[in-house]
Image 1 (spheres, one colour):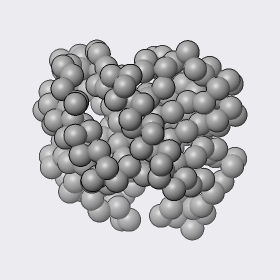
Image 2 (image 1 turned 180 degrees about the horizontal axis):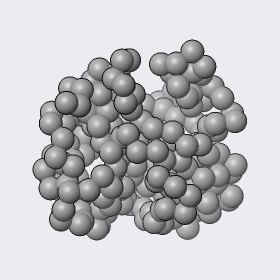
Image 3 (image 1 turned 135 degrees about the vertical axis):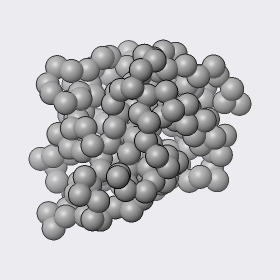
Image 4 (image 1 turned 135 degrees about the horizontal axis):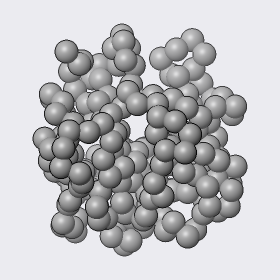
Length: 197
């Protein structure tokens, strides 16, 4: 089912990599969307490990659900195989594995997520520590406008294509710009392990 050729570039140590080709076919993306939509939807929250955590529409407007491991085991196997190779070739982190269920995310028109990091860099509240974040675009890029994933600073992004993924160190600051038209559907996966040394 998920037997696509998995390639990423470039071939040097980096905190940000993108897939050269799609990890999932359009049909596989549709399966993930259907699975995500079949799970209970939630209004996305921010800062769950902080006193100000919770739903904050000034920082994040999106709907999420969680993909159970048993629902799409081949998907999880594909993602794990990919990230093990990507970590070996690029990130070089110790003890990398999928540590939590994948997040199916829908950004409606006007939906966004302001600047944030995916990991607690102090490591006080989050064992295992998120080390690598992956965003995989599920719907076709023609179905929405805006919703660009920016890394580190405004304007630092590359338009994503359906089935392609962008992986980056979870401690990098990033955001999703407001969607101007349509709905942006993505899969977000975190890979982590023991705290950084």
